[in-house]
Image 1 (cartoon, rainbow, N blue to C red):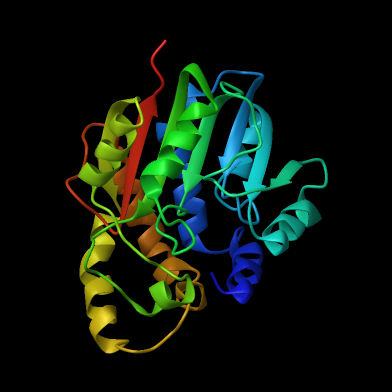
Image 2: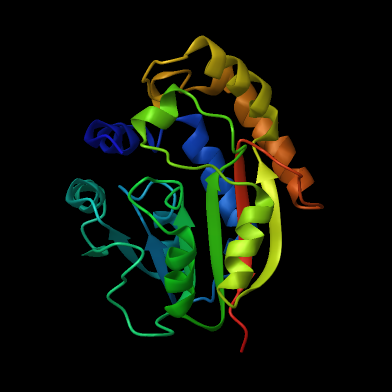
Length: 241
């Protein structure tokens, strides 16, 4: 990811509609599984925009390979426990965490082997603990934002299901998310051909709140069923006892 994108994330996490709705989605699917007073890993934490909310339930440890991301995380959360490491070589003992959250990490060109990364995330998860993955969806949909974030791959929900089960975890659900964004994103991919731009510079208010309302309606649907695809895909898995 371009270093400036970390700064954009840090500046946008409280104001951009996508971060607010993504935290709400993660709270919905992962929050009920967080043991009160537990220890949770935010793997590939960036500045903390998508995972720092878990601190309301217990102790969060943030890990990222980019020093700037950790600096930005610490600026707003000086009490945080942070470590510089790759998700493919975590400096923790087996079974160290009650839950592991990994948001938009496996897609990155720096992660050469997503399967090895998921196996490592599963290794540090305690028996009975939960792994939550969220990644870009629609394999062939590449846009200007993908060039800013150094996207090497996108995923289907079946990809995430396979990655978790191959790591010895039980995949409890795999769903698409932000399905309503697929048509406009596909149109943007055509218009932006060859360009390099960040989505964070576009419509931070979500078109006057319209996108926030659509995301809320979609979350109610996700609460009842898995979506077949989406601009993002999400999986929740358990390490067997």
